[in-house]
Structures are given as C-alpha cells and as structure tokens.
Image 1 (tube, one colour):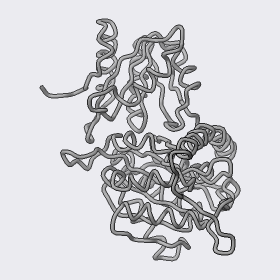
Image 2 (cartoon, rainbow, N blue to C red; image 1 turned 180 degrees about the horizontal axis):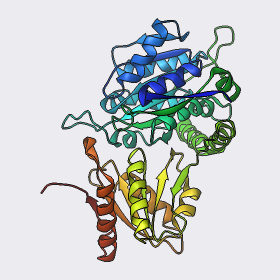
Image 3 (cartoon, rainbow, N blue to C red; image 1 turned 180 degrees about the vertical axis):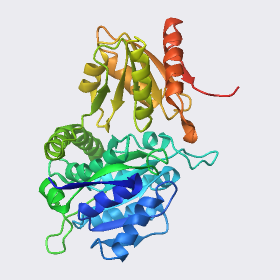
Image 4 (cartoon, helix red, strand yellow; image 1 turned 90 degrees about the vertical axis):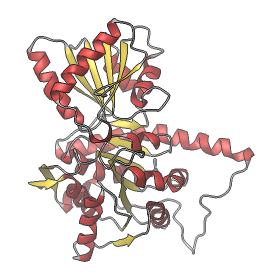
Length: 391
C-alpha cells in the first residue's frame, strides 16, 4: 500500500477521498460548516484534477434531486450538506433510499433552528434517522477520509444499493487540521471497484424507478427497504475488514476504549469521543472502573454488538448531542430498547449536552460521569438530564 501522511483540514481530506474514488458527479449547495468540502471539490474540477461534473444548484433540495438523476443513470455521485440544508433536502432524501440509489453524502453535523445556530451537534443526523440511509459516525479527519471511501464501497455493492451518510461533527472535526494518511489512486482502485448499477436508467433498456404505490403495494415496498437496510450490515463488515487489511485501520459497528473491566460505561457518537478518551485515561489512573463505548454505525443499528459491549457493565451513561423534544434522547432510547430483553441489564442514565457547538471538555465528561452515577443511585435515571444548562 502506498500512502503519504500530511496535515490537512478534515473537510479537505473528505474532498481528497471523493477525488480518489473517481467520483463522476458532485451536486451541492454551500452551507456552513460543510462549505469547505464542496469548495475543495469545485477547485479540483475547475483545475482538471478531478474529471467530474460539478453541478452548482440553488438549494439543497435541488442538490439531492440532481444526485437522484445522476446516480440513476449510473454515475458515481457525491454531495455534502449540514443542518438546515439536510432538512431542506429531506423530501428527496427519502426518495433516494426508496429508489435504492447509492449516493454518498458527507454531513457536517450542525444544530437545527430555532434559534438559528451554525455550530455543531447531531440534531440533523437524528432527524434523518428513519429515512433509509446507512449512517456512519466518525471522530476525526482520518476516519472521515477512510469512511468516505468505504461509503462508496458499501453503498454501491450490488447486495446493498443504498445511500450512505458519513456524519462528521461540524467545526469540531470538519474544520480541524490533523495528520491524515492519504492513500494513492492505485490503492483506492484496488479497494473500490467501478460503480455498475444493476437497474441503471438507459433509453436502450428502459426500466421504471420510483413509481407510485397504492395501499396494496406500499407496505411490501417499505418492508423490502427495511430488510435491505438491516442486511446491509454484512457488506459494511466486509468493507471494513477489507479496508483494514489494506490500510491497517479496522472499523467496527460499536467500538470500545479501555472498556474490558469497566463497571461504568459512557456511550456516545462522534468527535467528542476523543475528549472522553482523555477522561477515561485520567479516571482509570485514579483507580476508577470506567470505560468508553463509541457508536460508529448508527443505521442499521448494531443491536448484537451493542448488547455485547454493554451487558457486562453495571451502569451505562449515554451522552446524546441531540434532544428529542418531549421524548427520550435518540441514542439513549435505542440503547434502552436494545437492552430491554437482556436478563441482566445495566442501569442507564441519559444525559444531553454539547448542543449548538457548546464545548464538552475532558473535565466536563468527568462531571458527566459523576452526574450519571448520582442519578442512577438516586433512581432518577429515567429522566433525561441536560448538562450545562444555566437556570
């Protein structure tokens, strides 16, 4: 494997991955904090470094609509967005999944209005949770680069054919310059086969995509899509194994950090995991039995892997960077549901924080451990606690 390690902003590392994947079409509308990704790609196309069609559109709704058309005719297709942009493309987002179009999209995760806020949290990813897209969270620039390449492999695999979303924390990851090991074109070509859709739109061999479904057909189509999303995990695991064998970087649906002998586990997704790792190091050096569980694969939800990761602990503290207004926090509700049928299950505390770009430092995570354990002990764990609220 040939590679070169460079310092690069995570957004530009994503653009480099899109270029190395020989992407045919990019359709996008700029929105903070995603803009650097598509600016980088626009520059590559303009300079002749990437032989692709770059479609500047008037909105995110149009961006996803253009992606539908390009993917349906057999073009490898990429877009990127964030926050309100993801919400604006929501109508077409669901059509991409139901038409089984393997578009890859990077989402620089951002808070949702209102009030207007351009900084990061994971509200946008959670709102689109049920749209039929494969969703993967990353924690740094290297993972973002890797998962965009893996994303094309997964999405375009003939046993999957589903759009895939790579979730990157807005600003806290997307705008950070890091050391990233870049692969060369030959290595990426070895990993990623050319895209060939089985049912491509072709005037010489006409097919119908995305047609109307009456009540006698709709339930069956939704069942088929749900089955496809669930069964995509086999290919996701295959892709991550193959990529790991090639690069030495292996990924898993649920990843652990110093969790083997932990009595209390913290669970979260995304870039703040790296702050939490510092907290785990400090608390373990003080003799505390704590560990970290990170959610890599969000959809399809890795039920078995989550049970295996958590069932040996006494206490689980779930930290969500999104709030479900009037209901349980998104990741915590999934985990409660996952563990409900486990005979000996841990006690769970739900904490929401880091909304709208608010920092959560290693010292904050130490407090979050204290608060979570106190709420479990005082039997208030069923209520979601919002960390850092000024009242």
